[in-house]
Length: 445
Image 1: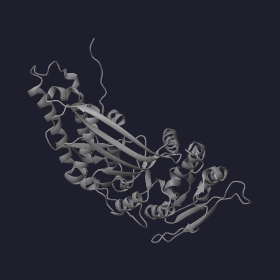
Image 2: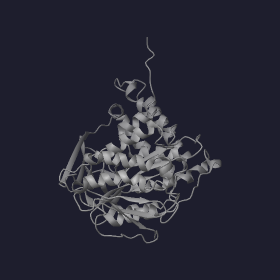
Image 3: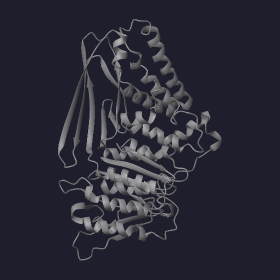
């Protein structure tokens, strides 16, 4: 789903992404030959493209235009979704011609919401992954958004309002997509304001991801190369489909909260229309009663469909020893996992109670960890526990506290903070900790 209006022509997105997709088509997972692809362009109208099979009498793609944004409909039932193995050459031919079809397009509006509804109508019967590439703020049709950038409130307590969803359409539509096994990934390119807070709801509830490229322009080689590498890896990645996750634990333990991009169908069942391999998910476990056993067990089961169409279940069981010694708890703490968990909590607190509350919560946690260690363990009762085991946790949390996720904004807009929050919610633990980790140097002689 590609924006083909004037903003995407000015920054070179339409031409660049067409070339990248054409080159990456053979790398899309298609072991069983059933992968299907379709393309929709949008500005203030919707453009459907019908691609014939290879070897047809007429190999030229046809474009069908729909201007009704309130009730977008499918202009033809055939050839909008085509089998990639049967149409590879003609799809590549279409992508070569796509930039020239709109090279003089003066439209500056964006009907992304209506395009999303059209894409959902195309794919709801079979499930799909919808990829949206947009260069401007949606300002027409369903899900219309307004530029709510206010520089006068940046860095103040009122800035938290900019982190809230502006239009309820994006959450309700995402939930509807999740029910029909449709996942949405967002690639946002904008030199001006982009409402990441609203648009990121689409990936958040459908198991998708958000990529943001502020000020992207194809004229800069580093921008074009970065997009080519990331988008090619994205298209070629093998993922799980139609997945559900359930986590169980020993008696006395309860799953109290889940964090990540998915939709909670019930208190312990998470639904993923797509299951990427580079996301992380956090589960908060509550202790409801005294545990007298030597070990407790946690088990996560994922039921999913592989890229080649086989239905599989993966079960992971973890046994953990119990202890009544605080030193053992500190010695066995996973600093990166704890940091990821509190990053999620910070984003949650920022969205519900504001940035000040998120900063205070992280700061209080750092103080609590260090004071508990100093009071109970640093005085010699730690049984030889080394200080290097506890130090990484407050370092990570303090870095998070002063990252752009929570720190008062010094930038001229709030968009970088929103991008950082999407990173904190989506990226793998090792990737997130690399982002937060301070560069350290050994100053010993």
